[in-house]
Image (cartoon, rainbow, N blue to C red; front, side, top):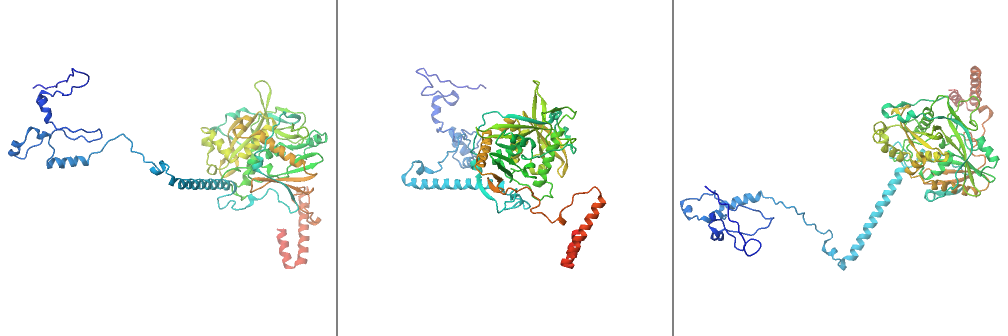
Length: 585
């Protein structure tokens, strides 16, 4: 049995198919096509059955009545039920996206005039709500830096919100400078600093520590035999000599200048004593000042507890960070006896005393024709330059105390995500890192070495390990942390100009503990000379100097206690005896 492929129509009169298409012979030719039902449809319409030869007529009568065209007729009841069943399972597949309706409707689209005033009011109300949200966000951000959220921390006002020095009633406030004005200051020092004198001696840096990693960490050693000196400006014999020689008008140390230069980044309170003597200014720090300790997590959102008995309190961590820095700066050196000795020995070490590896550079900057600054700057080590020269190095260490508090585990992140670790430290210790960078720039250091030191165990604050050491160039690192040198010198120049207008005397510059501002107070000339005893005690109550003979010292203490007990008993009877027993105990 053959199969009729069909007839291909050919249009002899033009292009395209002919007007009357030829039908295959199996369908009866062209006359048969007129009886085939046809309806136009679109691409989105459902296509059903064209013809069905599987249907059986109900009976012979139906079979006789059935014509050849019945296969194209789907109007019966059975066909309607089948079509309904097919329609229930039919799903339209259309790639066109659904039409988007305008949000504001046609009235707003055509800018009808009655709607314009109402729309303008809605826009004003929306801008007002956005302004309120922005103001609330800024207030929350400010409160996150100023207050604690833990019940054991600083609430509204606690010990951490106290000033670093007690403001006395007889002090007179002379100036009040908000941070908003400080951040706008700018001053450029055109001349390069001049080295007036170099003192002390430094050792060479051990490059083996550049290869230290968390998997091969080094235990942090303790250097109890080496002495570290935190001498203020006026107690420095070299600065006194330079002042007598009239080498400058302003004298300070790199620690004090760095605190001034990074004032806008500070959160905790600190103070600097300013003495105006003749036409000279001396910037000093008090004994036991906050500037001697290194803050930890000062700029973090979650503040540290203030209980000093807690190893993770702000004070305990500051003391821990200070000792870590001292030990780290001595451990990463080559202790083979080879040193670089400068012009003069260490001015603070006595004969036979072992001093830490520190070099002091007394440098002078000329601010203008009348004002020049001399500062004592520290360098911790030297490194052999490939060209045959020497490079000065600053050695500092960041310390990790509890990964759960900081949110970053150094032992896991330092090898793969060093940038994330540094970014976290820049967020939590922005002021400390900025001060270190300022000191490196002032000292003219060629390289900063930052060590990452972590506790061996989070609850053990005595044993530490050096995880890695990274090196940075001070100027590149200053640009990385957005430290503007023009603003640094602008702050110093502004403070010097203000103090130069004061008369001779003593002043103290205090960073406000709760507000972003600094205040300058005029204080008596004998202020801060004896911070521990406000007035002299009677001779019998004064602490006697220790004696070499322990038995004699014990007898003197017993005699003094007995005499005090007898005097109290005579004066107050039985109550005096109880107080005497408590005193002896």
